[in-house]
Every structure is written in C-alpha cells, then in structure tokens.
Length: 314
Image (cartoon, rainbow, N blue to C red):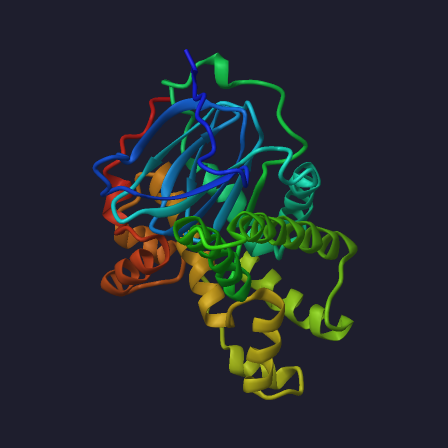
C-alpha cells in the first residue's frame, strides 16, 4: 500500500523546502514509499541516497537533481553523512514545471558521454523487492534526472538555500522571493535543456577537441592519460586546454577522469565479485589506499560499504 501524504504547505507561497540528513532524529534516513499532490525537487548536496521512483532503485550522488511528478509513488533512503534538499511545490506555483521535466530529459541525453554513462551506471542497484507493482506505472519520456557539475551545481545549491533562508526569516515579500527562486531553478533547467538539445558550444573546434578526449576516456577509462601531451598535440598550452575543458564539461580534466573512474568502479563493486584492489585496477588505479580516498571523496562512502551490500541471486 502506498501511503498518501495529505500535508499542507506552511505558507501561501505554495512551496516548502526542507533539508534532510541521515542524523535527524525527527526525520530518520528512511522515507517510506509515499505519494502526494505536490511536485517534488530533490537535490543531493552531500553523501548519497537510494531513491525509488517508477519501480527503479537508484543511487544518487552529490550533484544529482531529481524532479518527481505529482501523485507519483517514490521513496528515499539516506546514507550516512547524506544531506539533501527536498522542495515540495504546488503545481500552480510553477506551471512550467512540466516543461522543466522535458528539459531535464533533453539535457541528460545531451551531456558528455562520460556523464551520460554515469546516469546508466547509477542503476546498478537491482530493483527492491519491497516495492510492489503499485510503483510500476507508465514510464515518463525519460528519467527526470540531471547530474550537475561545477558552477551549475553550486548555483542550484545556492538557490535551494536561498529558498530555505527566505522560509526561515519570513521577512516582507518572502512569499514572492521563494516563488522567484523556484522559478529561477526551473528556468535554468529548461534553458540548459534547450541549449544541450541545440548542441550549443563555445566553438566547434573547442568542442571537437574536448569530445576527442572524452571519447578516449569513455573507451578506455583505465588508460594512462597525459593531458599535457594531448594539449601540445593540439597546438595549445596545457593551461589553456584545462580552461577550455572546464568551460565545456564543468570540471578540470583530471577531476573528470577521476569522477568517471569512480563511477565505473561503483558499478563494478555492485555487480561483480572483484575485490576492492581488483576493482581499482580495472579503472586504472593501482594504489588501493589512494583509490579508497578518491572513492570516498566522490561518493561520500568508502568502497567497502558497497561490497557489504548483498547481491540479489540471479
């Protein structure tokens, strides 16, 4: 049975934003399967969580943004040190929300291949048996998910915090301010979706250069990458290459490579019987201690946590 939450928004803005952590005694880490009349925006700020939506169990990492449609069953289980913003809003507050959903799907599909792979790797968790057929309904055109990077992530976190600040202070005009910040979030998502779908880029040669190295990483994540040598082969300095790469992808090339390696390792830890050292080697990292530190930096958890999760029998 899917619980129905018939809660009310605490003020006339039609928006309520809460910060959830695994340590809160009044809001334990597990949020059971439920549905409500509100749209819901979930942004992972720290750590991670298991999110259940449309019959799938997903592991969300920092920077993941999920937009849940009204009346759709969903659940969430926060992990240790997990922290996320949850924004409920009445559909009438932002009538463009459905357009934002479409923008999320377009943007996710048009992100660099390594980030698109991250969206696939995230589904390495098998479906939770506790979720019954009640959660299985017609799937939307795409998963309403976006993985935010760099300045894009920080901007969204800032807007969520701004809603929370206005909600707490309740100064003159706070209702309109809350609505304005939510509108900015949805407009940014729509704008990013349209830009990605249109294939906008700073310039064709820069995009082609970055696409070339992204393709190499995707094809051989365990390979040895010398970004300085690659920059020189393109006739530019290493400093300029790093600036171009960060401008397009959202993070420096070394950080991106490490990010993709950890996400690949996450999938291996959940789906194979490889040891942690063997998993590290599969993604091109041959120092197990360094791998563990890097893995925890990206996911918020040590790799042994995922080895402790029992795999479902085939």
